[in-house]
Image (cartoon, rainbow, N blue to C red; front, side, top):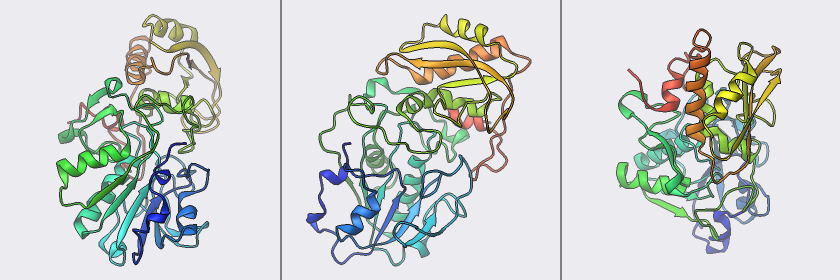
Amino acid sequence: MPHALGIDPPSSRWHRGQRLALVTNDAALTSTGEKTRAALLREGFPVVKIFSPEHGINAAGEDGAWQSSGTDPLTGLPLISLYGDQLAPSEEDLKDINCVIFDIPDIGCRFYTYLWTMTYVMESCARDGKPLVILDRPNPIGADLSKAEGPMLDEAHCSSFIGRWNIPLKHACTLGELAQYFQATRMPQLNLRVIHVSDYTRNMMAGTDFPFTPTSPAIQNINSALLYPGLGLLEGVNVNENRDNSLAFQSCGAPWIRSTELAAELSKHKLPGLDIRPMTYTPQSGLYAYETCHGVKFNITGPAALMAVDTGIKLLQTLGALYPDHLTERLYKTVANPEGKGHLERLVGVGGQ
């Protein structure tokens, strides 16, 4: 897999005499499949502290669930959770640190929270005068800017941990590119260095041009990642997104949906890159756990043609038209939104009051 460590080898020794903190998780691997933090320590990088995002250091924690601090089981280093008691490194956390390295894979969607953890780290480093190095990674669902989708975020009404700042819902950028944009427009005092990916072009996608590495419990394959910017909107309504198996965000259902009817109505939209089929399943967790749910499965036939956000919006519109007496907003409680209110508006990024 293309990876920043392959273009800026440890032999550069820029780190000598430093005390480094690393923001990472188990999904962050080198091109040879080694966890980044293990590779850095093996090559002599003096990492003394680890920060981890939502889903924890093992990238396996439940969506939205509090993650504890403690000791990293792989390295034995102090581990500070940025999805528990705090969302950003404190001054105390960084006072004995010379430089922070950030290496977490993203999936190209505004409401995927690793991006916003990066922005909190950027702000902390800018506040405390600490250099920040981003080890960039490919956008697995593609970085063709002409295929960015969805509304821009209304910061005045919808800024939250699932969308802080004004970018499209499907942003078609790498985290390194977004870091450079945010540094230029919001915190020019930040000492930022982005280590870019080698042998990478904007039309590359995971699954065809490089392997996909699972990034969190519900994003275990490239098809889930490709559809997530659209079907992730289901978190805001009372429809199960089938997140407890390999079809997460590729399928959905509810006890009150008529599967054949929904599939037929969605097929009328001729959504590009998709074949839509009726489906019945029983979720093992989450909304409607252990109840029979009727719905649809989205089979991807053309990844490059897929318009995930448009698909998600049309799905919500069709559900509302067919089942106006059943479809309602869902309270979606997380560490960053304990009451769970307004989740759909925060996902879409518009419509808040």
